Length: 214
Image (cartoon, rainbow, N blue to C red; front, top):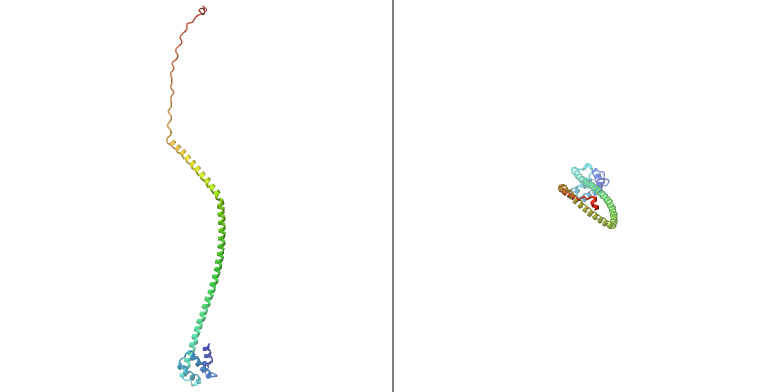
């Protein structure tokens, strides 16, 4: 801002020969040159060149004035570049800040979601623990009945095993019989016993009635 101010209010009026107070204007330009380390020879020749009327200025005076103006413009250009870069950097930093805020907001939302999920997980765990206790209680109550069922199952398995063993034995016996049938029993022929007829009885004498009467 100071460079532009001195350039527009002091140097250019001196260069054009329209400065109202040449002495003050030259002092302002010289002071500016010293602050920005202009060449010493330029600063020495500058007051004489700027205070001469336009018609009396020679080529050397014009050269001095042009070089001083070039120095001023160079610094102005440098500061303008720095300002532009600064604005670009400021914009970049603003973008970074905006991004950081957005990331922070997203992180906050993520944190809130994680907290809600954690609370839901805790509630689910609590419910699962209650269900586990109830199931454990039911299992304890079901224990005696389960033991009886297991006992009945063992008895049924034993009965089934015995039945299977008996059926297997009968099957084997039938199989053996079908493969090796039993030999037929021998036929016993009846024995004929010859019985001799009895001898005829001896004839007894026949007595007459007369004899019997005697």
